[in-house]
Image (cartoon, rainbow over all chains, first blue to last red; front, side, top):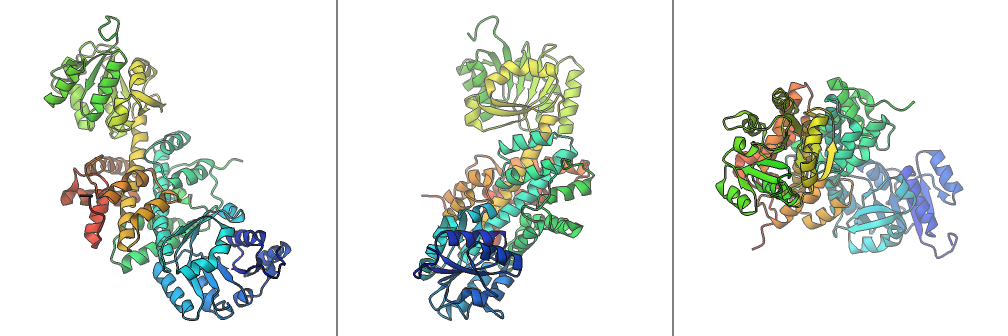
Length: 305
Length: 305
């Protein structure tokens, strides 16, 4: 089916763990998919799985009905669209650009406006869910955009999403919802780390702490998900400290611009910055617990031999 | 059965919404229960339900096998035990004092040591669960103490508890677990409030925010439980702002004494203090969202007429 002349054509920009899974979901759903990445090995793996390798976003987007951009931040997204070899010029008129990076809503609005001037659509669609759910087409998208953008993106979203929230009729709203989630998620990781190392400081049995808290009013999704890393002493990155340095940084920028105080998120950001500055930026974000332990002379569990 | 000469005898000190429910659970399980409270109406209701009214802790504790203390804080607990008309002198030797107030573990250890010197037992047993679960005997206790203390308290705990965590062999450990929970719970309420009013500032649909966040990685037990109060504009106290002024205050005291930094909990405490200082101390703790709204010129939902 992927070689059918009537198949929809999709481009995927960025073949990291998320983008590779999403490209696979699109191939599996019968799309013709072209993709590019700065890492030639990722592109080779994609080609071996039936995708068409492209040299840059412009080449990947040529003739595509939908361009899915799976990069890290706003600057990369802007480069993918409007930089040298960017996708905006080669996307056909009426095609849709699906932007998944977490970014300031004001930037999402600006990118959308600039693309829409050229007759292409922009769907603001940050996502949640890890690489496993990307591979099985079960991501959650927090999307906003015009009806035309949703209509053009829907076949691709159907292939990639387990859950699609339609959050508004303009770019920026999806990004805003994502930032609210990131504010909470970042604070909860920092709070979980503060609490867990404080429990260790008091000599409490940390497995018992995990059992009690996950059954109590102090629980959070992040406490439940991240604190097993501390119990196992395993800080290999599932999600890195620097992700929240970035995302809580965006929260600060947004909040300052709107004259809205975020003292709790600000305190959490400082802890991620301390962890990153101490050399743990690329380690798992539960490393914030290691930072507290280091500062306060607490011993946390060591990794199993 | 409650008049059987072989029935266990229990005293309940404090007949607020929690203590009244616990006294009812004990009566229902066949205990002979005597109780006191500073509020004569609460005592009259208890007597009408088959309990024996007492003038003070000393009178209530006379001849009791177990004394359940359901007061607000460490100072009240100390007064119940060792103040004028206190229970410590009249409890029989070998009886157990079950302390449910949230307090600094160091104080729990000190009260336990002082009582144990007199030949009585002390169970450090802070609890969670509201008045509804107190009434049905389904509270959760975070308990620690000697084997003798647990043995003496077990029949009463069986009557009052849905879940009993046995967290250590000395007073203080139950209190420490409770404080870890309160640190997280307080931070999560402040973070939920910060995020929800920030979402309102950006003009997002708050019911959609609730739907998305409770299904996402940014969720917490407290977000899910408290933010409906903001959606309804209902700040009648289910649990008051001043509870977390107290409990995060204890966290600060403990942490400072142990030279352990708690920057995230400290930021959260300041928000509860601002809410309390602004006149919302006795309102629902979701009022922290109203404080953010007030400071940042945000309109939150009004109560239904």
